[in-house]
Length: 276
Image: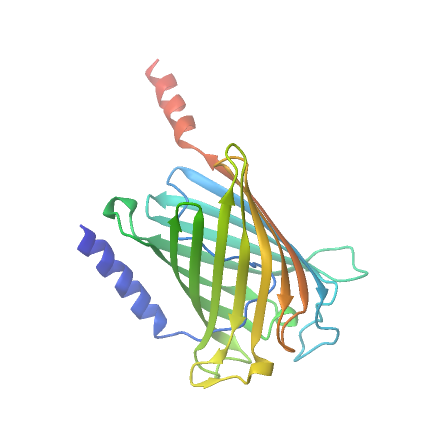
């Protein structure tokens, strides 16, 4: 059975990787993924909010500037099996002086992981994300992301590595070739009843595999983050990202709020009521 799951993951990864070209980390979903998937009979509702306090002031390649822009992403993830989930995204954006949020695009994201019963020493999963975004908000209107996810928790320490690769299906970067956008998270857990994880997150975009960008054109963000664990059903992540190169937004405040709804208990109550 393990060989079946592993072979399935390898086939999915290889077939998608052959299409891949990667873009820079955008400002709609600033998150380092963990390998864990949403349990079956459960749905995760998340709101990703961030504000670019020091960013691009002028339009570049027809994309609206993001200085003082705020971005809202509604993410809904449904657990299908103990090792497979499907997520969907709605991207919204507003600018300084504009009190309305405008539609940006939609993505869908299936994700597989190595089942817990295999007892692997590392967490491992594979996320694929495909979707559309309006041209005025992105150089590429249709994109594909392949995101392997590797993580490990040891006592109170946690580390996650996302070597993401994206592909421009349609847009200005279609002919640029595969690009590499790694993301890393390291944190330490404190507390007993209410736990908090304090650490940092890093996001980068090094350019195309066939021609790495000069350092000044690469994107590198690094910043402190805090995860607050008030309940297994809630997710709270707060952080501030500093840009380290001229091509990177110099300051972004981000907040992720998530709430999981479990349907298995409700389903059992319905079954029991029918038996009565």
